[in-house]
Length: 450
Image 1 (spheres, rainbow, N blue to C red):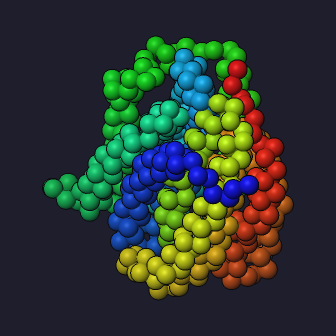
Image 2: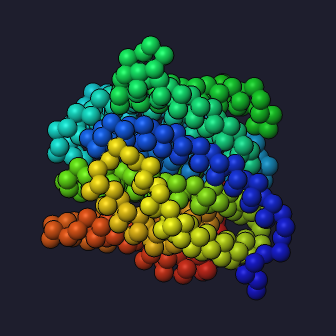
């Protein structure tokens, strides 16, 4: 039994797919980071308001990510069989669901922005700032959903670079417009957080247009046409829904978890909310490499299981576990070493907020070791390998029976903010026990193709 595969094609495929996805994530992070830094110059209330407003973006990403996950898992397994006709039908189903969800969430946010934000915060200054941001930025949601579905379609056939290029274009547009609209350059008025929202909307429209052009005119593998997106296949739709519900459900559970984090910290002083925003930005940066590798592993897993190569998949699974454990220690150590300089970039936040942010990042440097192993392996191996409901059940149990109860009790007892933060992150270590047993049982390899 080998713990490191000698199959060189595995490593070639892993890094050929992981690097573009990681770079895309880094660029996407840079867009959000630029928003965060520029708005940070406006003070704690502005940072907190945009952070609260972006909680809906978190829900959007989680649900649309579930749709994309179902698309990617099914399409990757059909890619193992080289069945591009079925992949086109799966992509059409995914885009249709994405459009429906994007329109729905846009309508809700445009009609009830303040009501939504009151779920997360009781501070009027934060709600005022967040409502200004949310009412505008919600116009980007539909474009975001369509773009992500098409990027997932390309990844399923091992075309990962286009997502990176699209995100790079989005970064350039967003950062340039942020500078002009937030601070009032080139003769335009200074719009503050409203300017940040407008810049985000325009950049999302641009990236969606570029992605549609690529899929329709440049890609020669799927040869997807607009008419394909209007068609449907009853059996594949049934497969999509059956496998997609646990993925979407798991993502919804996780978004409820994250939004409850926000609601808990929304009852703390503004300095704590601002610190959570800063710490979560570092957390997102830590996810860049992990998510790139995890996505690459998911594509390889789907393709290998779809092709029926189970013994080879076992060898890959053992290798993946060692790689992610090493990545966890590397990322956790990096977070610990860079926490001071990172917080120093936020010149507009108070000293109290900076102190809380440093404490939060110290906790993250420990929990991220577990995050890299269990989250990436469960998504890249178990979920992509066909056992789509296991991660949903596992997350549901930990979120509602461990994470949220412990954090709510700690907050109610008046524990320091960093202790509450640690309670909200404790599952990242505890889930490793479950992950080790599940992954090495190898009962998660299920062929989902017809």
